[in-house]
Amino acid sequence: MADLSPQLQEVESQKSLLASLKKDGADQQAIKNAQKRLGELQKALAIASGGKGKSSGVEKRERLLLKTAKGTRDYGPAEMFCRAHIERIVTEVFTTYGGAELDTPVFERKDVLTGKYGEDAKLIFDLMDQGGEQLALRYDHTVPLARYLAMVGANNTQSKIWQVGKVYRRDNPVMSKGRMREFKQADFDISGIWDAMIPDAELMSLLCTILTRLDVGEYTIKFNHRKILDGIFEVCGVPAQNIRPISSAVDKLDKLPWAEVKKEMTEEKGLDPAVADKIGEYVKLKGGPELLEKLKADPALTANTSASQGLADMAILFGLLDAYKVLDKFSFDLSLARGLDYYTGLIYEAIVEASAPPGFTATSSVPPSSNPAPAAPPKKSKKKSSSPDEEEEVDESSVGVGSIAAGGRYDNLVGMFTSAAAAEGKKAAELPCIGVSIGLDRVFAIVWPKWVEKGMRSKETQAYVVSMGDGLLKERVELVQELREAGIKTDFLAKNKPKHQTQFAASEKDEVPFAIIIAPEEWSAGYVRVKEQKWEFVDGQKAKVKSEDKGTQVKREELVAWLKSTPTLKGWASGRLVE
Image 1 (cartoon, one colour):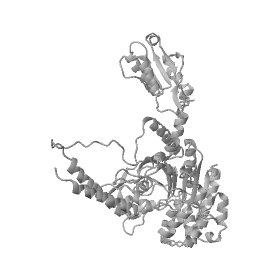
Image 2: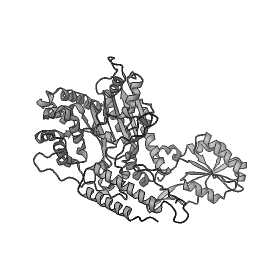
Image 3: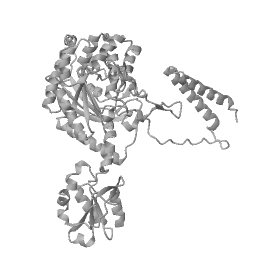
Image 4: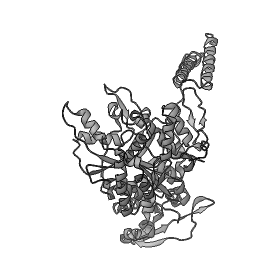
C-alpha cells in the first residue's frame, strides 16, 4: 500500500492554516477557500486509504446519514395536528375578511427575485441551471404575488388575496425558535387604489383577530411609516444614496443596543457620527396618538414633504384603528424600519414576549439622552461545527423568536415588473398593494408548548368501532362507513378477529373519545354501546381516566345524532382533550 504520510501531513498543515485564519479574524472568503481545500484533501486521503477493501478490492459501502438538511425538520402527527389547528384559524380569518386564495410556484426565475430584498438578497437560495433558466427558491410570497399581478395586466383592482406555503432563506437557523431555512408563511394582501389608509387599517384589524384567536399571549404590533422614516433621515442629513443602508441598520434596534447600531452606521456605512446622533434622538421615540401630535409639532419634520405625507396618513390610521377597537394593541415606534427595499408606506411587525433575545429589553435598544450606552446583550455564541465544511451554528439559548408577523405597503413593486416587461416607450400599469405575512413556524414555536401543557388532542379521530365476540368484521365495516358518511371521523382495527383489549388499546393510543362497541345480541336487536373515554394529567403526563362504566346503549339509527349532541363533539374545534 502506498505511503500516505505526505497526504496526512498536507491535511494537518491545512487544518493549522484554517485554525490560524479563524483565530486572526481573516476575511470570510479566505476562510471558506481554506475550508474547501481542506475538504478536498480529506476526501483524497479517504479515497487513498479506505476507498478500496484491503484484500477483496471491493468498494466499501458508504453509510447513509439519516438526517434532514440544515434548517429543515420533520413534524410528527401530534405536531401536525397542532399546526393544522393554527393554519385553520388563520385561513378562516382570511376568508372572513373577504380573501380569495392564490398559489404560486415554489421557485421563480432568478431575475424575478433579484433587486427586491436589499441586504437580505444574500439569503436567496439559488438553484443550478435548469435547462437554460437561472432559478431560485422563493424568498417570500410578496414578490411572486407582484409578479402574478403584473402578468395578469395589473388590472386586478381592489382585490384581497391570500397564500399559505413554504418559503426559503439561506439563513443561520435557530430551530427551537421557529427560525429555519424552510418555513411556512401565511400572507394576506390587498391590491388596488382605495381611499387613504382604509386597506391598511383593515389589515391591522385582520392581524389582531388572528393573533387573538391563536392564543400567542400578550402581543404588540409595532408600526411606522417609511415616508416618516425617510423624512427623518433627510432632515438629519443622511445622503439620499445612504437612506436604504442606514434604514437597514436602524431595523436591527430590536436585537442590538443603540451603541452597536450607531457603530454600524458610522464605521461600516460611513455616516457622520453627528448625523447618527440626530437620528438617535428620533428613533428612541415610541407611543401612540400623543407621539403623532409631538411629531406634527416638529417644524423640521412638517416642512419635509415625505414626512408630512406620512404624518397625515398616520392621523387617518389612528382614527380607523380606534373604530376597529384595536388601538390598544399598537405602538407607534420610530425605530421600526423593515429592511426590505420594496416598502413605500406603512410598515409593521407583531411581537410577543419571546420575540426579543433573552436578557434583551426594549429600553436597551434606544439611545439614552444623557447616560452612557447600555452594554450589549451577550454576543450570539456559536456551536463549533464538527466538520470544517459546515457552517457554525447559533446558540439557540441566546436568540429570541423574533417577530411572528410583519408586512407593509409596497405601491411600486407591481409597477417594477410591468415596467421591466413593457415595450420601450409604452406606459406601464401600476398597482398599489399592502400585505401582511404571518410566520407559521414561529407561531407554532410559541403555541406548541402551551398545546402540550393544556393537554390538547393529537389526532382527529372521534370514534373507534370495537367488536366483542367473533370478529364481526363485516358489521364493523358497515358501521364505520355509516359514521364516516355522517361526518364523524371513525376508525377500526384492520384485523379479522381482534381481541377486544387490543382494539381498546388502539383507540386509547389515538386518544379517541368514543368507543362504539358492537356485540352479537345487541347488534341483532339494533343497538350499539357507546363508551366515552376521557384523559387527565397524572404527574404532568396525559393518562386515560380509569372507569368502571360499561357504556351507554344507543339505538343504531340514533347513534349519529347522539354522538353529535355530546359536549365533546360540539366543542371539537377547540382541540382540547383534557378538560
